[in-house]
Amino acid sequence: DTGVSQDPRHKITKRGQNVTFRCDPISEHNRLYWYRQTLGQGPEFLTYFQNEAQLEKSRLLSDRFSAERPKGSFSTLEIQRTEQGDSAMYLCASSHSSGNTIYFGEGSWLTVV
Amino acid sequence: DQQVKQNSPSLSVQEGRISILNCDYTNSMFDYFLWYKKYPAEGPTFLISISSIKDKNEDGRFTVFLNKSAKHLSLHIVPSQPGDSAVYFCAAMAAGSARQLTFGSGTQLTVLP
Image (tube, rainbow over all chains, first blue to last red; front, side):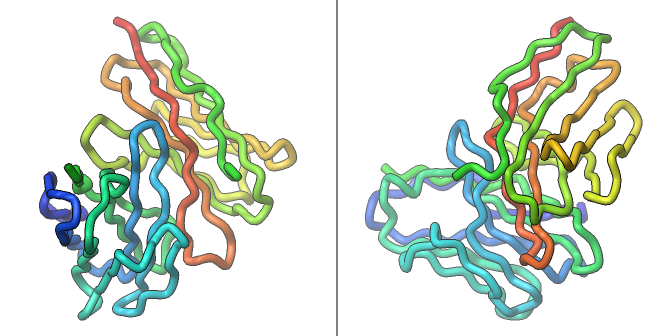
């Protein structure tokens, strides 16, 4: 399978706990994106990496959120001190800088109780 | 402000007929447009795209039309099949940006057998 891979697919956590999601992009894709989707809405951009550099962050990405892509391959998105409002699907996507098509993973569902 | 709008939350079409999904945008910096299909609890799947230098792009049963002067695009599916039932998202990216996507809120298409 050469698509974008995300793990875990589902996470239930108690309010105040930290969670981490992992994304493995399509091989050789140097661009990696994180989006968040809530029910009834389209995905919203969170942050963007080109290789290992985090080049853009949305104002939606509060200081409780941190994303890394240490070696320019996989990426992690950590949410600290989770709140109920963080409950959403977190989508990872990747593309190559030579093209415009962005491919999404299956998403990671987060439920904060 | 919603830069990409899909004003029809839902659409029902008979199998074999044409489905037309509409999308309007406000940002004149958008230069590339994509349509994604999404099933529940899965990530968006890329369908078809169009550059702002074109007014039509076709791929099998799917055709996307772009009217730049009206800032409007549409996705035509002919003939519609029950397996096309899903949420369809219109997305746009702006020139010179990180090529991030701005999504509409989606249209639920139901194809009736």
